[in-house]
Image (cartoon, rainbow, N blue to C red; front, side, top):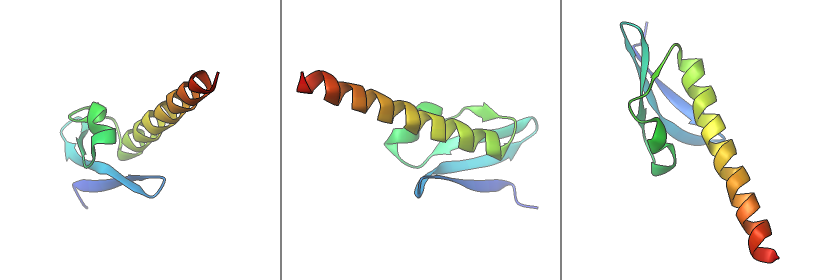
Length: 71
C-alpha cells in the first residue's frame, strides 16, 4: 500500500498527500495550491475536494472581478 498520492484537479497536479499517523499531509506542487500547504486531511479524497474547492473559489473571485471591471 502506497503512503503518498498525487492530487489532481481539472487536469492540474495540485500536489501530493503523504500518509501520517492521523491522516494525510498536503504538499503543494504549484502556487495556486499553496494555501493548502502542510494542511492535514482525514483522507486523500478530502484533500482532493479541498484543492477543487480552492480552485472553484478562485474562479468565482476572478469572475466577479471581471464583472466589476466591465462596469
